[in-house]
Each structure stands twice: as C-alpha cells, then as structure tokens.
Amino acid sequence: MDGEKLIAFFKDLHSHPELGNYEYRTTRRIREALEAHGIEMLDSGMETGCIAVIRGEKPGRVIGLRSDIDALPISEETGLPYASQEPGVMHACGHDSHAAIMLGAALLLKEQEAELSGTVKVIFQPAEEVDNGARNVLATGNLDDVDEFYAVHSYPWFRPGVLGIKEGPVMASVDKIDITIRGKSSHAGYPYRSIDPIPAAAALALSAQTVVSRNINAFSPAVVSITRISAGNTWNVIPETAELEGTVRTLNPEDRDMTEQHLRRMTEHIAAAHGCTAAFTYTRGSAAVINDAGLCEKAREVARETGFETDLQEDTMGAEDFSDYLARRPGVFIRVGTGGFVESHHSRFRVEPEAIPPAAAFFARLATVRAAAD
Image (cartoon, rainbow, N blue to C red; front, top):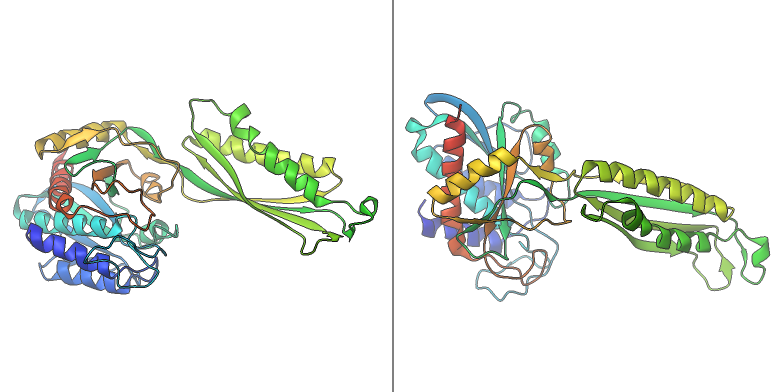
C-alpha cells in the first residue's frame, strides 16, 4: 500500500469513527487490509481490535508495535471533506492516524519478511479512551512473549517530520476519588438539630488542594481536582449526605501512593471534626507512562536514520493505558508530529495526512532494528 492509499485508508477511518468497544467497522477494515497482503492475524477472541504478526525468517526478538483505534463522543467541527459521518462521534485524538501508521508499518515489514530477524506483533487496540482496552488485549496472552513495546501517538504541536521522544514519565497515572460524608438531616431553620455534611464537604474540597502544595516536591508534577459536589435537593432542608468526586494525576508512583494516603486520612479527620462519618473510595486507573531511557536513545538513532528530527515531548497530566504494556516489558511512547495545532479531544482537532507514510516507515524500521538487536 503506497502513501496515497495509506492516506485514503486514514481518511476512511476518520469518516467512520466508532466509540470504545464498538469499533466493529474499524476492525473489519483493518483486518481486510492486512489479510489482503497475506499478513497473519492472531486469534485473540476479542470482538473489536486485532493483532497482526510478521514472522521473520531469521532468529531474533519479539517486538510489539501498538496503536489504538477508538474515537470520542465529540461532534466534529473541522470542515474537512472527509469529516465524521457519525453524529456526535469524532476521531479527536488521532487514533485513526495511529491505525493507519501501524497498518503501513505492518505492510512494510511484510515486504521485508525474508530479511527480518525475529517477530513483530502489530497491535490495533480497542477502547483506549474508556481505559479497558490494554488490559483486554494483554489478557489474550498473545503478547506474553514480547520483549519491547513501542506506541504511536499523534502530537499536534509538532509539525510533520518531528518525533517526540523523552525518557522517564511522560503521561500521568489517573485515579478517581469518590467520597460520601454522612451527617444528620433536619429542617434548615433548626440547624442545631442536624449534623450538617455540607460544611465538612466544603472544608474537604478546600483542604484537598493542600495535598499537592504542601506534601509533594514542587518539581514533581501532581494534580488533585475535586470536580463534583452534590448535597440536598431543596432549599429548606439540611441533607443527610454530601458527595464529592474528583481525580488524582501523578507522574511518580511514590506520589500516587502518598496522595491516596493523605486524602484518605484528611477525609476521615475532617468528617470527624464536623461530627460526620465518611466513606472514601480511591479507584486506580492507568499508571503513569514511563519511557525506558536506553530504548529512547535507540529510537532516536532510528529517527535520525529515517530522516526525522526529534524533540522532547511535553509531559502531560493526561493518561494512557499504554502503561499496562510497560508494566510487563520496557518500551517507549512516541509522539508523531501531525500539525494542526489544536489540542486533542477538541472538536477542531485534525491530523495533517502527510505525516502518516513517513511515520509508518519509521516504526517499521524501528521494529526491524530492535527485533535484530542482541
């Protein structure tokens, strides 16, 4: 598949976006393109998403190349001739370009199969945006033998021809806070007969902001955000309960543990100080994405070889379930400059299509080099 056909494939996916765990057409189109070129598909048992494998004729290592394929519940406002045809659904994070890039890499690797050392598994992962896709893919067991993982992600702040490669933490862990503070209801005119949960909730929402500012090193990024407070349903009754929800984002695992401990203790003590009780639930999502330093340097070498410039990708407090792969094996999360200069998850986000074919060549070469490495 030449560059023009690869771009046409990208535009087709962009026009027909599908939400996480519902990527049926997307999966079919990817499989059709791979199978048309004689590429083996692994039996994953997944309803959406797929894994292709290219087996070299020489011994070597096993390399995983990962893309994601799901879209977002956003109405597109780009005005592109190939804009989304699905109302309220849009590829606003570049996953259509990720799939096209890794499809192109798989086709290039297939062409070089006779000279390839080792094995490359190309992953088209569903449901990244709903934070269960990576776990489901890994649960198939099809990737248990992979030695290194490499992921692609579009980056609108770099022009095409630039790759973002950076050692260490590059994306945050993402955790959810659920808190219920319980007091005693009464008529609002007789507050002394109540145990009012609202002042406790307000005090907790304010105090939570000190967890980062007073407990975490200022050079270690972390976020605690209380995003919802709910209490009562009328103007003249003090409610029995108040609810808070929020999120914690950290780049360092030790900050993650410490933040959970501080928030739990703070919740219990503030509730008690107001005569209330509290139920605190801390749900861990994806861990931080932490790139392997040595493999970053190897990726930069391949980038130079294939004509790319490299830059240090910006750390972000957004999350990515590629961390689930890195919990098993080392790897690198690589940003591909795609232009557009509108942030992802925005209704006017767009990818410059000319970024796709060179990126496919880069990932094919990266996999070839790493599969042959000692």
